[in-house]
Image 1 (cartoon, helix red, strand yellow):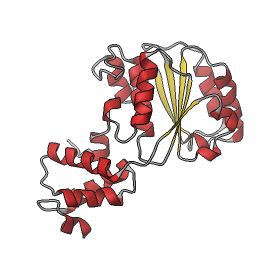
Image 2 (cartoon, helix red, strand yellow):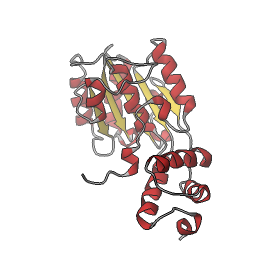
Image 3 (cartoon, helix red, strand yellow):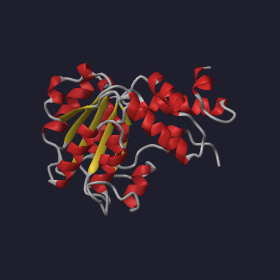
Length: 239
């Protein structure tokens, strides 16, 4: 079996596993529990802090066949297919490579059809700020009067590039940089599960260098593990 990088192997699969964004996850879970789910969400914040991961967990929870405590069960067919990117009701788009009006027009055609297996058709648009002005205008028309079965979850690292008209038709959540303590705690948990010897000072050094990005911390940890012979200590990590 080929090696799986830590950021993929340890990607959170539950709201409760998201690191450092409780203000977002608790609000989303409460909304699901109260059946107050919006038709448009905008997740804004720095890279590597959980925006896309949260979007996927939200999509899974909404279409889960056996949702538990406003979390996905991660066992049903819908959860399995969404996790592996094989669910027809949940589609992801990269705003950087699908930024034109033609792509949004195609999307608008797709939303006319009801979901196949889940409750909603969910469209996750990453780097949404990269869309052209014409594409934003086309998307706006859909956000103004979305079908009841459609939900848009958009993620951006450049909130100021999103038109005000789009923002006003979505619920906006601001993701924050993750604290060094929270990153270090998460890395320690991974190393304990992977049965890799380490010292806390060395791991905190990685957390500091990540500058608030959990994804960057996992990338650094991957490099350090590959470099180390035995124990991950602060001397070796500084090298």
